[in-house]
Image 1 (cartoon, rainbow, N blue to C red):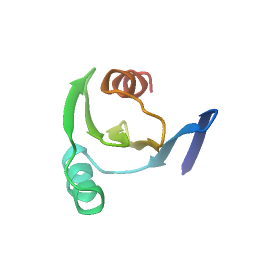
Image 2: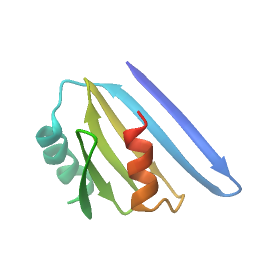
Image 3: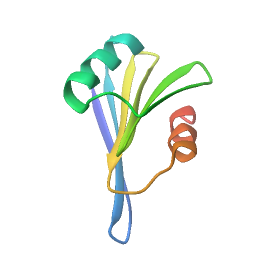
Image 4: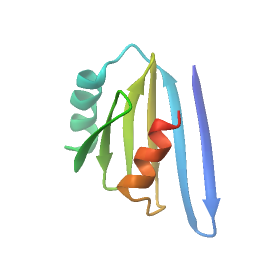
Length: 86
């Protein structure tokens, strides 16, 4: 029920994690706020609510919870592009 993919370039890296989940966007926001604090931005794109944080993003789609994290300096457009491609 869990898949992780890590992408690296030099010292920069980010990991995309996929976990089977019955959460919806509201549950995800509540849980993430407890763990990571409030998102810096919320984006609606292609039916997904994507929560953007200083070091990544999270969203749910079709029974899967996704998270992107790492030290790569991905901007909002890059995070949204990754989120909508999955």
